[in-house]
Figure 1 (cartoon, one colour):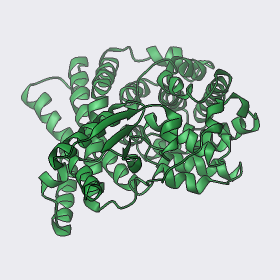
Figure 2: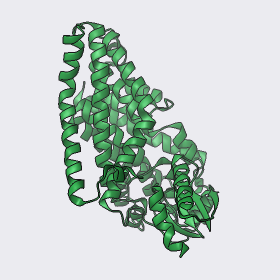
Figure 3: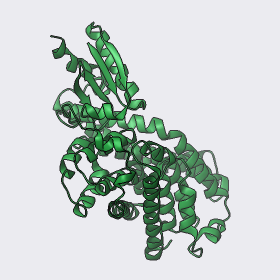
Figure 4: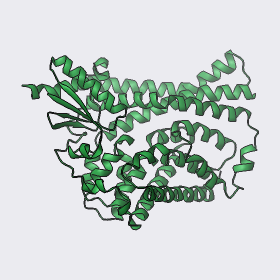
Length: 351
Length: 80
């Protein structure tokens, strides 16, 4: 039996009431989170808010609950909205587009199209077979992991709306420019030949067609469960490290070595981020703690984007359709974009 | 009936196969299951987002993992 069936959301009224009730519970929990831990840890147990132990432990519990709530709420909402889009629709919109405007559309669609990285190869084949230019396809494939719903949820919760919009905007610009540059480089010969020989046959089945609201709500619930199952170990390690840095790292330690005064900090952050196999959930609690310790936002965003967008598993997957020179160009161009964004943010918004 | 699960083999494909096997058992059908992992063949069925479900060479679903009940609804008309 499906989750939606178990919840009994069979009539529109019951479904609406259920959704409103869930939203109210969510807001209540979110509002009560800080007072609850203040009361439990400081008033009842008697930890000192100004001590390292007290603030570290408080940070750990408060942040874990806050992040869990944000992930549940935002992933659910994004999944339900995304259930109206599909790779098939995206391809239909991009078919026959020229570079330039095509790159802009592809980057935007990469953000809103529901996409599992396992599908990167069939989607790539489908796009190329439909005559979508290579650079436009790359804009889509770069934007999709780079602007990530988990990162949006966490950035919004930890830093507010401004940095979240900067992140989404910067991600789009990187995907548009990197895809355009890769298209200009005329690298079609570094695509595995079978891609061009493959004909997309059969009858397309659009995954977004014919879904009821119950289906979409159920997809939202399942996506929340599946993402949380996947990321909770990263999240706990990230929050644990964040709490340790928060409570114990000397105040100016990170700022001295990786602060605004170090011109190589962004470059280093990206180089460290690429091989670090994690995801936004593990990285962002660390980013928050490092930001509190005086690291500039641009350096931290560049670090996070490098971790999220340039991972080894992703490259191994793309190796099935792209030859090493094109993968190299992909990493170089995307990495250069991320570094540029890091320096730009540091110059514009500072710490 | 021959049921093919299309996909490179991530968790979604395994979940789809599980749902399909439950649905087949629930309908009391006999079916052979095959896994299709090679990309040109997957694309040959018109699939751009995995996992995909093919019943007797016809693509019936792609890009999401259905529940067993949803697979039953897809299979029921095909058995008549």
